[in-house]
Image 1: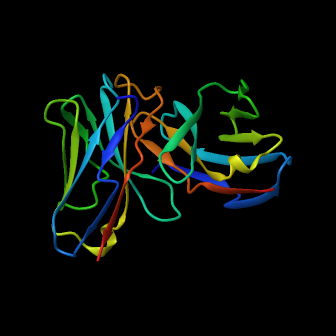
Image 2: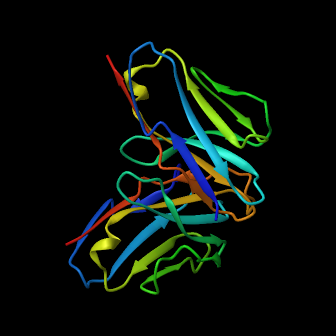
Length: 115
Length: 110
């Protein structure tokens, strides 16, 4: 596709439920990133993939958060046993190559609300 | 720990005004400084700066980097209501991820 596509756009879940958020990066982009953006804040890094390899997951806030990119394209961020503090916008970004001097291009995000 | 600080946090101007947004950074093994514009949806890429003193320009927007003083500015001239958005600054270093500031909320009144 022309840009990074994320689904769903909005997700409402009850506390304790599991959720799965999907990211379809720009075609051919090797690098894929997940960020969490709380209201009024800038995005914060969660995890990074280069192709199918998860090279950095240092930003994942707890072991309830899990991400995968099994075929090196689409990625899924899963949150188990959701809690209210997980409410945020989850942004996915992709970039060409695995170099830090290439701009990241963002999707519209998934707004997650935990009741 | 990498850190990016933006100022002001918010700014209200009238159409036609010129604004300057500030960004200071502390990024390990710094490589680049990026500016994004965020309206209701995705942050959209504006500029990537890697070298000091070289201005990047796109229409009414321009940006410059000072690697000695560790800051960047984003200028917008002849502002329009469509410029109203959150402007995010982010630093990139040896780690692949971006470290973002909290953003500057710009409101342009007609």
